[in-house]
Every structure is written in structure tokens, then in C-alpha cells.
Length: 267
Image: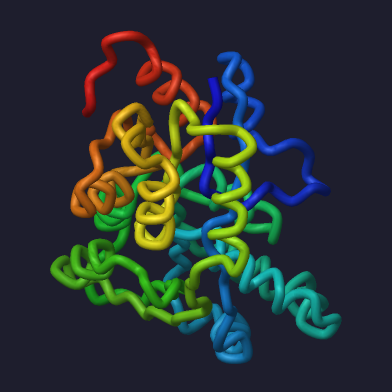
């Protein structure tokens, strides 16, 4: 059976995509189609803030894209040297809170130690942070996207834990999305399952998929990487067959495999 993944391929230099590998272990044939494109912004401001770890109580990352913004900064030789010589060590004295294994892996790539990756979503990460941080302490620096959800900032604000958000990327529809989807459906047919990886992916992809699937749309099992994506699907009128227990390739593949078994019910 075929599974369509609405996400970017993993960087070729870092080996095969884990989602394709995990789904393959269940004899599911997965294909990746990028749904989103990203414009990085405020990178000078981001590095300026990263240059003053003494002003902050730690870091919060809820998206791999925020780490990509930092990696872009570190491509500049002088900034990379400053990071390696002192800034990395100074930040490592403080906590770096993350959601999910993908974000945790990118945190490790820049030399920091992630905490809270098993929280799995912003709500649970907020609870984790609140259990470890004291009210009215130094602000946590939160590089994020323009479409960030307000759950984590709201919970921290209610508990008196300061959070300084900085928008470092904006999300748009991938320029090749419609063409890629049309090509996939014409060549591969309608997949058994389609996996959405963000509410933005639902916004940009669902209508195209409904048109391409026609009357057979109800045969497709829609899967979500997490609760916010599942909520976006339901709000758009789509039935959600499964949601990954955590935002990892292993949990997602297991959930899709179960959903594709006979008599699987929507969750």
C-alpha cells in the first residue's frame, strides 16, 4: 500500500529519510512531497540575542525550522567562531527545551543538550517547563515561526514564567505543491494514507487532495503527526484515522500501519 507524506525530504547528507524507512518496515511504500516553503527573517536580531546568553534563562524550540535559522547564522565564519569559542558553552549551562526528536536532533547538531523532547507537543512541553522554571526568573528565548500557536506562551505567562518570542521564519505554500500532487495522483493513483505534518500543511494541501481524489476521498486514511495537526484536519471537515503518539517516525509509522488494518476506526 502507498502512503503520501506531505513533508520535506530529510537532508540527503544525513542518510535516508526515517519516515520512509519506518513505513517501509511495514511494507508500506512512502513518497515525500514538500507542502511548505520557508522564508527566514530577523537573522541578525536572532544572533544578537544568542550573543547575550547572560540575558536569558534558557532556550525553547518547538520547530526544526527555528534551528535551521540558527544554522544559517552559523554559516558566517565570524559567527561560527564566536559560537564555538564561548557562546555554545554559555548556553549549555542553561536549559534548552524542545518538542520532538527531530528538533532535539538539530539542537544536538549545534552543540546543545535538549530537554523535554519526549513531551511530544507544545502543551506537554509547557507543563514540563513550568515544573522546572521559577516565576519571574530570566526570560526564555523562543525563536519561532510567524504562525506559532499560542498554547505554550499562554501557559507560561499564566504561571509567571517570562518568554521572549522572536519570529525567525514565515510559512508559505511550496511553489511546486499543486504540480507535485497532480503528478503523484496521475502516476501513482490514490494512496491508502496521507500524512499531514502541520496545520499549515492542512491549509495548503487538503483542498487539492480532495479535488484529485474525487468520490474516492473517503477511502483515504488521513494521518496527523500530532494533536494540533489532527485538530486542523477535523476543523477542515476531514476524518482523522490516526495521530502519532509522539512526533517521531516510529510512532507515526506504527499508527498508520494500525489505521490501515481492516476495520480500523477513525480516532
